[in-house]
Amino acid sequence: MTAAHTLAAEGLTLTYGDRTVIDALDIEIAAGKITTIVGANGCGKSTLLRSLARLMSPSAGQVILDGRSVHSLPTREVARVLGLLPQSPSAPEGIAVADLVGRGRHPHQRALARWSRHDYEVVADALAATGTTDLADRSVDELSGGQRQRVWIAMALAQETDILLLDEPTTFLDVAHQVEVLDLLTDLSIARGTTIVMVLHDLNLAARYADELIAMKDGRVHAAGAPRDVVTADLVHDVFGLANQITIDPVSGTPMVTPIGRHHVR
Image (cartoon, rainbow, N blue to C red):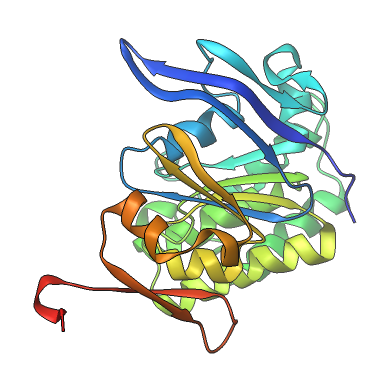
């Protein structure tokens, strides 16, 4: 199990020019659990994740990592604790899969130090866990969208951070690989105590895999808590503007959203 690092935001306000995207937001991320952020496009989900990863400076408030402002901490120290898989990562042209995944080890290495046996083992385990071992020698440029996404997740795993932030990690993946990735993240949370924070579009998968769910609307937290307490027909309508019915997922026992389209109203 990993050490229980704490992550929170206090009075966080984030802006793009004159436009406020996140407004005086307070959240506390549950250590060692899976927190999933949901909300309509443009509500600030990805912006919040970038700020938690110290990629954006707030115009007010702060992100707190282990009781200290994340912007006051050395970059390498933050990188050893907190990893981010952004929505649209880019790889150097021509880089091989194994080399890209290996870059996840950089925060753990000293300047000019040679790779240790542990470094090689971590990369091999990350490739195996994401089903990309057979791609190790191929160029990332040659891969399909789904294959690339699994390679990026392997790189994130190779960082061995205690907190892992993922912005739509199931993008480009078919249904089977979506479930595989979310099962893998659940394994990390259970076996290593890794704190997972991810943005998902699929409400049903979010409800099935999250320990804590944060529903955002207009740059604020609209509701937060266990999926069974957050995912209601009223909330889905308020946050997404979607007529819907809530039933119980027969597999997981979590709330399941059934959209109601204009042509399916009885």
